[in-house]
Length: 149
Image (tube, rainbow, N blue to C red):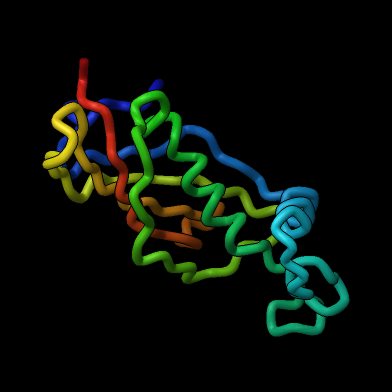
């Protein structure tokens, strides 16, 4: 399914994204290295073992990026003009290596663009859940979306 145009959304639309993703050690290590994040909780098994978590904690910015990425196919693929912002980002539970994550999205606001008559603004409430159904990440994403041609 490709992304929807602005005109196709209604407040309250809810999507359970079909793609799930199991987080691997390689995902976490490469993302941490690519973003120059040397946090021992993410890359040092011995330091992480000595922490309150007792194991490596997945890099939170990877978790956030994965949540948004899992949502793209059913929300903004091919219809996005630009992401305008991310708000109220929280990570209420840690993500660990081997966790399988799935995303949901709800449309919480729609607004016509005053400066671009060919576009509108959609606010998406994204949530990411682990295999136990716990919310591990959530945020609001504001996106400028094309109107249907």
